[in-house]
Image (cartoon, rainbow, N blue to C red):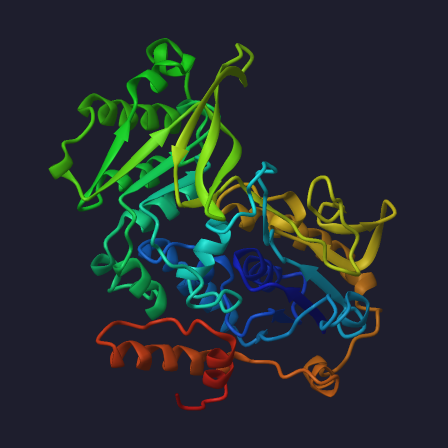
Length: 455
């Protein structure tokens, strides 16, 4: 029997487990899916916006894998770090370990004022309204009148949409109580989404973009002059543009044609801005008060260049959404430039040589690229390497009962029954509030629920 540990229960981890189960060359395989959190599903639970029910329903297919009798969910187990199990010790328990730990850090802007109060990563904001237990439930107060979201990808669109959406529309979702209360009391009336390049180079999908225009009580504003600066926009009919770019430009063209709305037309405005590069976060009274942008323009080679002009945009809240980055896991090799673990077809490389029994999949393998479904093919490649190595891996020592060893080391794993207990507690919490299931937002509450404790 081949015993495999998969570290991470997000899509890449679960797809790795699924690929292992589907390989007929390994008729007897047992997979332990380990996670630092007592809850499964990774970014599907803690990164998908609460009003994206269709994407969140992906949990159902992930659940089917985790409920397979050959798979064991092992939550509340930290791998690496000062308080975690070192990778070398974990390797003693399994024939193979596949690390699917994602890209947990956000990319900084690296501009003056970035650390001012009121300036946050979009990752932190998403974690807050998604009830991630690492973020205090009262971690955000939305007293700002104007917010700037830096970045033009789907994460930027998500956080802008949540800022502009009424709390009553989110009451039917699993948004935690504190976040829903803060959104209900929000004073934000204007949200700027700014990117340093043009609309044809924006990374958002058309579906996400159109959702901004469907928000009750909000109006999207696009400056026609900024659209006209984009060579692809100006010559759209004569260029072989990707379909998503063409659709995005069509949506933006429609919004720009409407002009500036009258004051009574919308409670909130979402301004999509292009060709603006942040160079400084401005301060007033010890807090962020705005963003100074350098105006850019196409350089004729597919990039942009500064024009020498600047524009200040008022903001009491700034959220940066310029990408994710992998974090080094102590005990594993790490490429600090790429933010990934060096590998060959998923095999971890130590000093350029494949390390027996160590593998990677997902963003820590290839970087934060692609959509959720991209992790499936990535996992299959890694599992193909693992299966090829299986005859040698089976000769390695492995524990008969890895969970017993983890408990002997002082850990208190949360298994699938514990997760089901958390689900029941969240359903009960929602019923008490007259809502559907509501997420428990803190470590103490999650672990108490996993043990079946009331309250």
